[in-house]
Image (cartoon, rainbow, N blue to C red; front, side, top):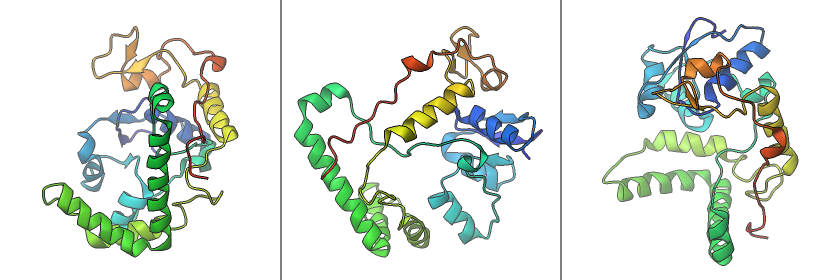
Length: 231
């Protein structure tokens, strides 16, 4: 249990409160310290023993932990009562989509093609990632073995259970938004490193329930579309 321990946070709007609800769903009190180290150093903060837990991506930090011989305790959010939705997501402004529908379709067609290729041949996808990361980022190097392990981990996840890349279902988003609302996380207050206790609050305030007024559920629609996906 994380009670009384330190969680290294990215300070995302719902992050600490989601972790708190996971702990409570497992019978804990949900009392922990939420630290905010530099974002790109959070994983190293955990490895150095300066935090007890953090949010990770299994396909990257999880694979890196295996390479380093680090035995992680993994707590998938869906195992603790939270119907997590889709991540990561591609976002576009509705006005841009209205102006450039064909551009959006071509972009998503190319993206879907890349995911399909990675699913067919994860080793080649890993090699491409390593090569392009170095070429496009002033010599930045991705560990080839880490890239291979990550691609292999994701091979059966690139496309999804529907068999169609990018397809989202309304009931999944509705369940996620409903959970956030039922858990009291959809509020008018936002997190800030310099809270004013009016519209902005500290991470500790948010977990303590000091987060402004609850937002009506009907005013928080799940906005998504499958319209521009390749057929």
